[in-house]
Image 1: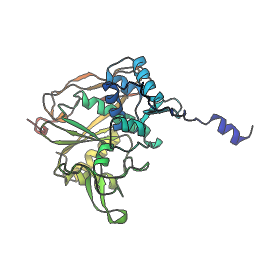
Image 2: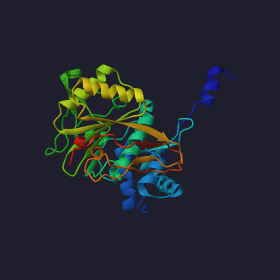
Image 3: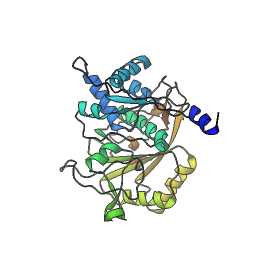
Image 4: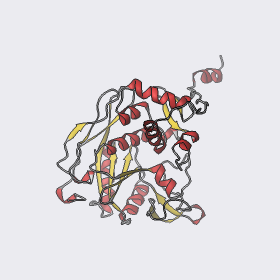
Length: 321
């Protein structure tokens, strides 16, 4: 066998997505709609996410996902060795829940990051960051601001386009201006991975940093946050201590240490419970120093689960007292 043939034989292949369309006999429950809405918010999700979302067993999570896949509402693929298969919403699934979001496009370079963001969404939804009125995903922010999605714009800031048509005229745009212009003379924007909106309408940007940004790019983003009055705080979750130190140092150089909060982020082994901050009495998650750790999402579906440490903030850093 030639080297090329050998490589082709061992190259991981994506499982073909189901092409069956929903029939009149298909029963899509309200629970299924909630599941589709969750999948639509993210570029990719795992069965472990669904298990946590619905509070069901592994077998039930796979059964619900299997039914949605068979009816063409989500698609399933597995191409990364040693990683579980993932699920994405299809156009039919978006139409089923009347979503205006575009079909997701996954950049494999950001696969681990996207999986982590989905776990953070779930953690925020159960109060790990305190009382939250609304959680806005990056996909929703871009869609509402009228920014076209692209496979190479998962987290990049340079060249991102300014709001065009679309979105709610009564809601302020989500994009953070970075100063200057990009291609075509359009304003450069940056979008956080998640935006938490508190009951008092405060906006808390959440950034998951699994890899280091260059100092210039990082400080451009931080300066954008510092100049954005609509953002009350920025929570950075970083896996490596060196990245956490650099974020803190950059925030100090820019004089916005009061705005930027940095916490460790870690992955718990598959099948074991993660640890996250307990629900805080404050509406703002990062406001409480009294938050204690509690058991987080456990999964036996072969997925990694994030673990967040206790917030390390002083009493004066509370967004809401």
